[in-house]
Length: 425
Ligand code: ATP
Ligand code: MG
Image (tube, rainbow, N blue to C red; front, side, top):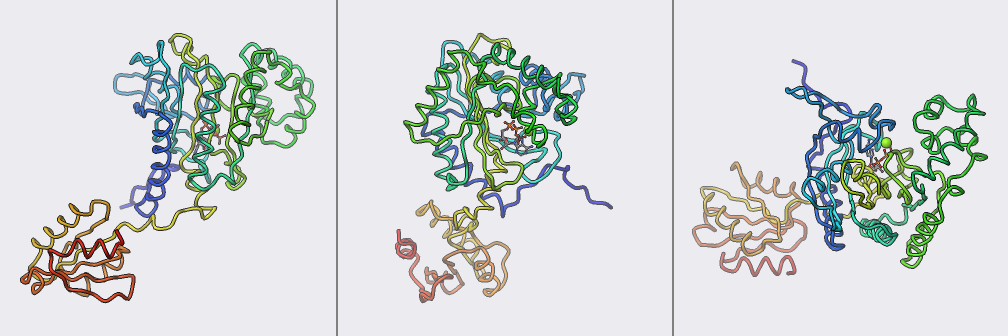
């Protein structure tokens, strides 16, 4: 019978790779806690309307990337393609936004029907950070400092660059949009097909077209920054001052627009040149109109999301993976002969006394030689060997698997102090 395979673009994470994911996730969640952010979890499936209203009908996500289905009631549901709309929905539903500020984060799988390639999947994983109730640039600087620190702690800060831009208010963008469309209409034939279509649906997206001819055409196009209100300019200016004061380097990218409709004023991306075309590892911006768009009171908001696959890929490609992540075991407990019960008890004693060490008990019997082979394979530093003679004498043998240190048979009562010495604790 033909074996069933995983869905294209939806990957398994195997035990050999999960330690690196756990490493990244642990660094991120620890950092977020240190900055005072609280974790929020919401469902993977939401009503399709939430995403349509939240993300915007004329976006790639809604036009062609969403996994949408009818449930048995005939309700239209969708697998979340991103977290922001769900986060706002959950906050509104539980009254977390009115008259309050929130610093939140979440993580988990997102689903988009895209063409799978390196750094681009159909089920991918994001860590998202959202803040509500802060209208000034200070929260933006805070989040950018946080992400910059994250890159330092992951050891990749030299390989990522911060790009920022201001999209202004929706009024400014409307004016700019008209000017851009007028300009591009005159040269429509020179535009690529995608951009021609976007001319009527979402003209700002043309700015981040990857097609060289289109990019060349944009060199003489009107620029968004000329359309910003004084207030937007002052806001952006404040952000750049705060970043400079905090020592965070940035590049101004006047063509940075972001794919989603809900952004206004500040937008940013952390990009790398080490991942080919999928070079954005973290992206976000201000979305002051979204809460209202989803039925809440006007609430300023600023947030971002990073792709875990891309971070993991980057760490791997840069050889920045810390050593020792793949060693799951410190101590392997071998039980030779009729001593299973005593060996288990001994292993539990070690776990009680040394909870920070990873202890694995041998299961399944087998010869002494066989058990030692297994011990070696786990990467353990030390094997504890309990044979029938040791058990009868209330002793145990400590064998060092990675050094030439001589093996020792000791009284079980001395075991913990011997292990403390062996692990230099
Ligand atoms: P891109 O321009 O790469 O398509 P995007 O603008 O669609 O990204 P966002 O919706 O802002 O991305 O998502 C934030 C981050 O999530 C991205 O910067 C990226 O790291 C990650 N990401 C987005 N889509 C995918 C995907 N299909 N596969 C893997 N990671 C993704
Ligand atoms: Mg995309």
